Amino acid sequence: MKNRQEKEKTTELFSLLIAALLVIGLCVGSNAEKISCTAASLMFKGDSVSKVTETKAEKTTIKVTEKATKNHEEKAAEIDLITTPADILEVIKKYSVSTDGRKSIGKIKQTTYTEKGATDIFRNIRIRNNTSTKKIDIKKVLAEPLELEIDKSRPAILIFHSHTTESYELSENTEYYEDETFRSSNELLNVVRVGTEIANYLEKSGYTVIHDKTIHDESYNDSYPHSRKTIESILKENPQIKIVIDIHRDSIDLDGGTKIRPVSVINGKKAAQMMIIAGTEEGKIKDFPDWEYNLRFAVNLQKKCEDMFPGIMRPLLFTQKKYNMDLTRFSLLIEMGSEVNTLEEACYSGRLLAAVLASFMDEYTVKG
Image 1 (cartoon, rainbow, N blue to C red):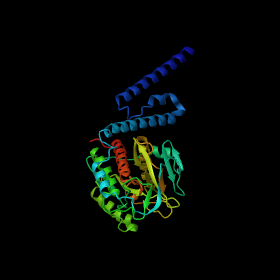
Image 2 (image 1 turned 120 degrees about the vertical axis):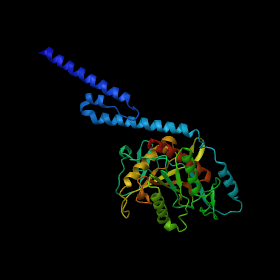
Image 3 (image 1 turned 30 degrees about the horizontal axis):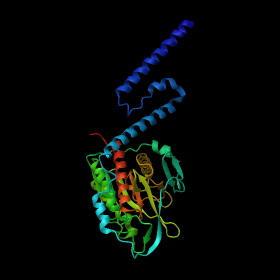
Image 4 (image 1 turned 30 degrees about the vertical axis):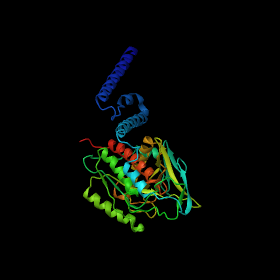
């Protein structure tokens, strides 16, 4: 009896071993970078099935993401991110104004934002949750599917500017002056020029970009209704567009009139720190049913930015706003520095953001 039981047990173990080897063989024959081959482990782990599956899936996702990032970093090396384009240097030289005889009305303080002000932190992702009722589990948000597919043969990304005339300093200063408005309708001097840097890089990376340069803030209070009409018109003509990004620059003021210049040094060069804004439906903000999809995109992009260029991001702002983000599931507002950053710093950050976007989009491009 004992011998028979031992024989049956040996036969069972042998069968399980054969089954495991068959599964492993199938995995090896598949694309191992995209498939989590956990079946063999599941046969022997019993109650720990879900934990093993999750661990394997996480490792596979990390591996795929790391490879996509590495591949794009190799591509990015072929596109000069650091050197300031000649036309920007010409613009700076042409429009710069001497500080002689000008009346200073406040100080400029250079700051690098890290974790200060963040309410939620997970690894290198920092978020400032400004809502009253929404909680964020960053790890959970990262695990949720983005449901994004990019067709590289057609325009997949729209860049525009609700506050089109927001502009920058042209040189590094420690003070700002009475005659400065930090507004310009000249697209060489305002956030349109930053958008152009983003579009140029993405196009060099093989993507078709729509960069709308319409001035929407002639009436400042009507900026978002005006830009909404622009977005709706473009999406109607190009329904395949997935990603919609509103490029701004911030204004950060302290008591006493000091203005903050958010800066991070990336590869030895000063860049304007960026801040992603993701909105939500709360309080007076209605008709924003898909805000969670925008948040997923925002958190994933925040992570990708910090993975590729550590320190480039201020904490992501999650707030009770809509800012036309309800028009797609991949809409964001991004602040590129503040008004006292230099145009050169903001444009450098534009190229860095574009490198991140290109790497991100590479992961979701449909192979034709």
